[in-house]
Image (cartoon, rainbow, N blue to C red; front, side):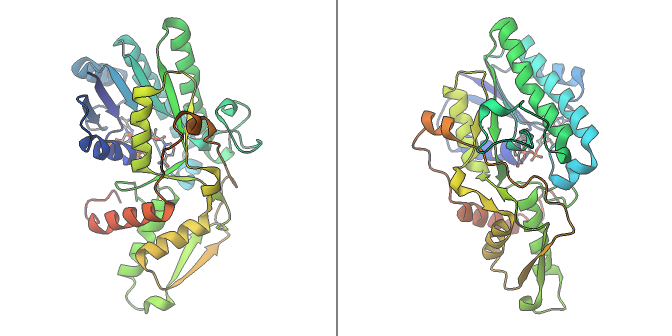
Length: 320
Ligand code: NDP
């Protein structure tokens, strides 16, 4: 039986894992922790957490996370905090003889100038997009550190590379949020708080040109894949966990899906004075498809519908 510690257990992906675990019949014990349980930038607090829980396995999700604008304004913090968190968690996992650690990288840490589709071999091939270099370099170091522990002691510390994630329990704070929770929050406010216009005359503003392309994975799908990785994937090499290349959508398409889920009757326009970030980061999930050919991803519009419904139902407790 495993005793699985989930760092970042109070976040978007942590909550999705919780939901999937609650529906499973496995006898493994899962412990979900957030920053209130231990500040993982603090090495003593991290050690105390591991001493108390004594995990056999770790799903390491905790990170300073944010959307394009949050990254652009705080690159140094993203670099330092994430390096501290990752070093503390990996070193404690090593000192506590954990049988496996799965840490989260991201498709947004790949080189800016690259060929497409991106695959697992390309993580370190060149500088990341300047908008999020702090987050990117800190995440890339996880892969380097995993290889170091493997070389030193044969540790099965590995990493997954999700594309953009969305779902219930996302972070909706305007200054921090990723594109989808940001749009959900702003569209809800436009519909419910702007009272002096009929809905048909309301205008929803998409930040940037709307043209960048992204792959989005529903958090519940990612949680199922993480459990599969925990039970079946025995390699230090990173594994991309993404929807298929043909499921890539533009930011404007994503805004249209959010509008449809809200049944918003107004207009959508693009504010091209705002930054777009990287134009695309198309990732190949060929390695995943070879290992797990029959995995069914939730269709994008269904995931958006469920996420909007969750937000409306949980408006008072959502992180905003
Ligand atoms: P969230 O922002 O939803 O959650 C972050 C989690 O990290 C929270 O549980 C938070 O705890 C915890 N945390 C942050 N700082 C600390 C700290 N100093 N000490 C302890 N815990 C801390 O993130 P997601 O669920 O979206 O992301 C999970 C992982 O997936 C991250 O590693 C992220 O980099 C990666 N990822 C995310 C993507 C996305 O689109 N969201 C895309 C690709 C990868 P609390 O809330 O209690 O403060």
